[in-house]
Amino acid sequence: MIGFTQAYRLRRYSTPTDIPIPNKSKVWDSAEEAVKDVKSGDVLLCSGFGLAGIPDTLLGALAKHKLLNTNQLSKIIASYPGSNKNFETRYLTGKITLELVPQGTLAERLRAHAAGIPAFFTPTGANTAVEDGTIPQRYNEGGAVNGIAIQGIPKEGRDINGKRYVLETALPGDVAFVRAWKVDEVGNCVFRYAANNFSTVMAKNAKLTIVEAEKIVPIGSLSPNAIHLPGIYVDRIVPATVEKRIEIITLAKNDKSDSKDASLSPEKAAAVAQRHRIAKRAAKEIKDGFYVNLGIGMPTLVPEYLEPGVRVWLQSENGILGMGPYPTEKQLDADLINAGKETVTLLPGASVFDSSESFAMIRGGHVDVAILGAMEVSQAGDIANFMIPGKLLKGIGGAMDLVSNPDKTKVIVVMEHCSKNGKSKILKKCSLPLTGARTVSTIITELAVFNVDRAAGEMTLTDIAEGVTLEEVKAKTAGEFKVSSHLGSF
Image 1 (cartoon, rainbow, N blue to C red):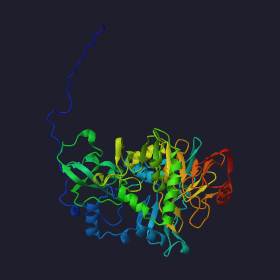
Image 2 (image 1 turned 30 degrees about the horizontal axis):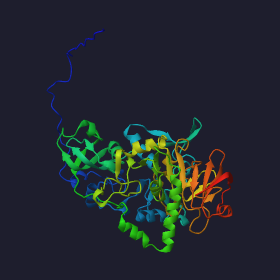
Image 3 (image 1 turned 180 degrees about the vertical axis):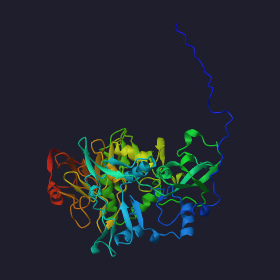
Image 4 (image 1 turned 45 degrees about the vertical axis):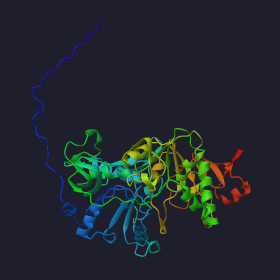
C-alpha cells in the first residue's frame, strides 16, 4: 500500500484576511441624471431583440433629455430593421443612412472591440453583396430612382484552407444602454432567458455603460456562478421603471383558434394548407436528436409534423437551445421569444445564452439543419432572401450566418414555387442580392423537392407532390434540373 501525505505551506505574503470589501455603489437615483452625459455624435449601443431586453427606461430618459426620435438619428447599424416600417420608408426614400450587417457579424464586431481585437475573418457574407459592398448605405433624397448618396462598404476577401472569408472590423461604441434582471450595487448583472441577446457584448464594449435593473440587490446577494456580466463593465445603474412589453403574443392552439381557422376565406384557407403541406414534407428531413434552427414564417410550422419518436433541439438565434411550443396564456413571458419575436416556452434541458454565443454555434457548424424561407434560389444552391434593392428592405438578420457553413449545417429552403405574379422562384441564377452562394442542399415547395449538388452547381428533382405532373414542374421551374430515376411523391 502506498501512502500519501499532504503538506501545507503558510505563505508569508498573501491577500490580507481583513481586506475591506469594495462597496462604492454605482446606483443612480434617476435615469434622467444618468443619461445627461450622452451627447450629439455619440455611437449608442442599444440592447434588445424585438422587445425582449429593450432598455425602455433609459431610452425614455434620453428622449426627454435630447428629444430623441427617428428623425434625429443620422445613421443606424442594424441587422434586421425591416419590421420597423417607418424606418424602412425613411431608408428607401433617402432620409437616413443604414449600414446593414449580418446579425452574427454584428454581435462579433461588438465582442471583438470589447476584447481588444481590431478585426477578424468570417465566412458570413462571403461571395455576397456584403463582400462586394453593393448594399447602398443611403439613397439620394427621393429614393433609388435618384441614385445612391453613400455606397456600401466593400470588404477584403481571402481564401483560407479552401474556403472564402471576409474581413470585418471591430465596432466601437461610446455609450451602451442595457436592461438586466438582477444587478447588485457594484454592477454584476444577471439576465433572464432570451433578454440577454446583445446585452453582454454591448455592455462590455462601450466607454460608458448604463444598466437599468428590474431588481437592484445588495452586494454579495448574487451567486458568483450566476453572474453573466461582471461589474467591471458597468458604470451606472438605474432602476427600470417601464414595464416589459410583448411584441407578438402567440399562444398554443385551442378550440377557439381552430374555429378561427375555419372562418378563413377559401383563398386564405388554401394558402394556409399549402404552407402546412410544405412544412410537413420538410419535417421528413429531420432526424431524431438533431439540433435545428428554424427561420421565421413557414419554417416554424415544421415541428408540428415531425415523425413519431423524433425529438429535436430547436435553436433560436436570439439565444435559446431547447425551445418549446407556444405558451398558454398563463405561461406568457416577455423574456421568452423566438427569432420571429413570437412568445415561446422552454423544454426541460434547455439553455439560454447571449447572441455572440448563439452565432458561434451557428457559424461553427454545430447546428445540424437550418430551414429558411427565400425569395429566390438558384440551381447551384444560391439563396436570396433579404432585400429587393430600392423597393423592399427586410434585413439580413441571422440568415447569412445560418448558411455560412453548409458543409456542416444542411440548409433547407421552404417556399412557394412561384411568386405572386406567377414567376418561378427557382432560377438558373438569382437576380436579387445573395444571402449565400452555393449553400442550399434541399429545396422544398408545394410542387416538388429538389436536391442540390452545390459543388457541381446542379439540382435533381427527387419528389413530386400528389396531383402534380412532371410537365407542370418543368413549366414552373426556370432553373435546369435532372430527374431522379426513383422519383418519390408527397
